[in-house]
Image 1 (cartoon, rainbow, N blue to C red):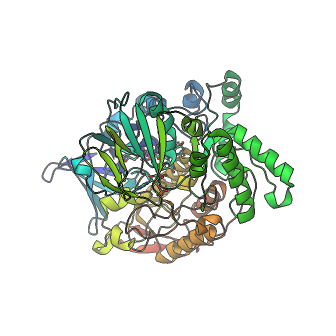
Image 2: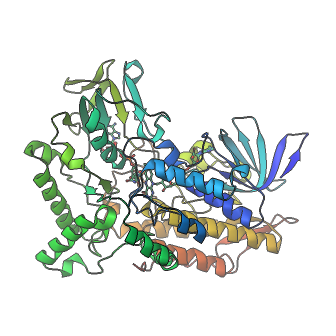
Image 3: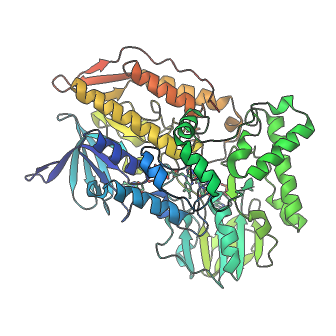
Length: 562
Ligand code: FAD
Ligand code: NAP
């Protein structure tokens, strides 16, 4: 770092915004590559998702042995996960451990929110302004701002007058919230809600669950870590990681390669039961065509509905909990423990707000459109996030020619490989729209992106290049490829989800993640680098003029290894 005392600008090779799993990985790898780096994090601790989402019951839905860094064998050998799916406190401890173990904190500045990011054409550098008043200049800016990091509280009449306490799952108080003996309302039935509800129901006086769209919740089948499983993983970590990186979703999942269409009814049912017992996201790999064939998808959906009917005693409640008009898996599957069982408790009520929406938050609680009132002491918004683009749009980086990202993305995000945006040289996005991102074990996707970024930065250092920038054509081609890949699946038919941005009023409805598979994607970005960074222009320090890479993008969809 070079400090410029006249302007009080601190200069680095790279500034990373955000210190979640992505930012922590990036600072480690950039430092290893000899790059001077500063991480700026708004919160007063590292951890990102696992710092902010402290709601009761928060835990991962990818097995912890998979949902962890692979970059250090010592780390993966010495860390012990206590459960198959670790809870939030344990994951947060893990990220803090990584920060300490690799002495990363000296390069991380907490309590520092980046409020402006601007590309300065003359110096060909990024200038970052923060809410602390400090200003940073960097050749590279790495956006590790998270794709589920901007909590979305829907605009609801009367919230300011509510006399009780209210919380959002994604911004849970650090000291926790005492819900015991209270009348609690939860709005939402997505992944966060389905984890939270069974825990809150254990101590609340009464719990009202306000459900607009029923979702599919799989039993997580969580349990304490089995020593023999941990031993096997630790002995075979290199192979397991290799498998995950080449797989469809970035983890070690058991896949049925048969199409449901080719299987008998009995064989399908047996496979689905097997998946139900395996738990969590395993259901998504029950059949090769589960996300492409509506009839096969409906067969799996009805299997889950029957599970709900057999679990929930009150048949009206059971029917209300049964998802309809929603292909299974086209909203992220929820993975919970005792979710449906919880509705058998006397102190739990399901309130359907699909046809009778919430009208007002009154000082005492919630009033629905038909006038029904629900008195509450505590209101919990489990209402999700401004996903994929929220944090980036909030910063609204200003690229070449003064163009703001929000304007460039006015009709939906466009990126090259989910990593770069044309017109924003040397700005890298980790797990951005157009990459597998939320469609994967995100730690795998994060590590793949960080590896690619560090390689690109090293290449530029070695070849004396000042800027790297995606060409408009490569970006158009990739964005079309992302849309085409989704259009061949049922995702394209289920637009009412945050994958499409449909949960945010006014947000363009565009399918944002890349569904072509983590393994295929990794091969693609690696090939692009191997072939001289196809689709990118490089500029030298002296000329500042873009130099085309050797060849053009040839996007091709293949199939993941798993
Ligand atoms: P984040 O963890 O979101 O970190 C981004 C950081 O950037 C935050 O700390 C934020 O404060 C900071 N930041 C943002 N804007 C600014 C700014 N302007 N200035 C400074 N700092 C800023 N994925 C899985 O694969 N498996 C799971 O089981 C799983 N479970 C999840 C559970 C929950 C409750 C949620 C919400 C998400 C889950 N995810 C899961 C997705 C999860 O977000 C990723 O796995 C991963 O943690 C993302 O890490 P990240 O570092 O990219 O982003
Ligand atoms: P979400 O999936 O977007 O769910 C939000 C819920 O709030 C939906 O049920 C939605 O209903 C409801 N809602 C929003 N506005 C509403 C309104 N005005 N009135 C009534 N209901 C309203 O958000 P999330 O549960 O926080 O999960 C987001 C993502 O984070 C997940 O998909 C997953 O990727 C990740 N996550 C993972 C885990 C895990 O298991 N590890 C846990 C939590 C989160 P509609 O569907 O009708 O809009």
